Amino acid sequence: MAVAQRMSEQEYQEFVLSGVEGVWELHDGVLVEKSGMGWEHGEFTTFLAHLLIRQLDRRQFSVAVNDWFARRSPATVYVPDIIVAPYDYGRELRGRPGALAIFSDPLPLVVEVWSRSTGSYDVNAKLPVYMQRGDLEIWRVPPYERTLTSWVRQPDGSYRETVYHGGIVALAALPSVEIDLDELFDV
Image 1 (spheres, rainbow, N blue to C red):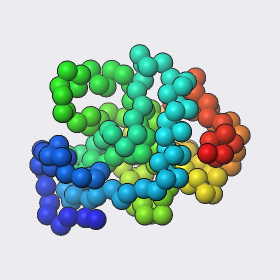
Image 2: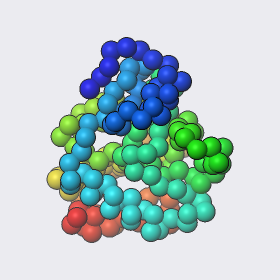
Image 3: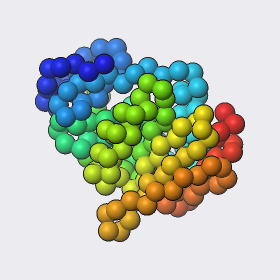
Image 4: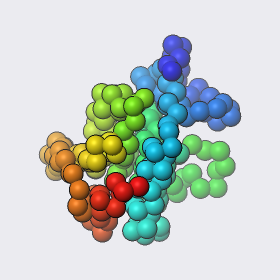
């Protein structure tokens, strides 16, 4: 659901912190509610986050599911399904209860898990913004298709797209991390 009134990022943060129900994004200054997700989406997203957390050094990286924000500009702030952020990104947020974790710097990994309610929005609106931000690796995962599409940022700023249908995927931005898609898709 989009709310027609345009707002600033400060108004957006105040709105999100007001205790209003739901997960909200800011798309070109317009407040957009992130649709509720079903059981499979939540279970799949949580398990993928678990696989990432298991392999990452928590002193170097943090992982969040639907809790942190990726900013393109003050008018565009999204909530990816999964964010992997360098631990240092949280340095200025620690000890500030209620401060939103909104990241402008490129993230090592941003994941959108396909759902019927947000599939085209994720591809048409959010993925180009993640690329404009310079995020290092972007995943779109439609679990029912048992595929993973990965966009990896190249040295020239372009992205290399790869579609996986199973097997082991080694993350380019997090070289010590591998995800077994067969295990993941068995959720």
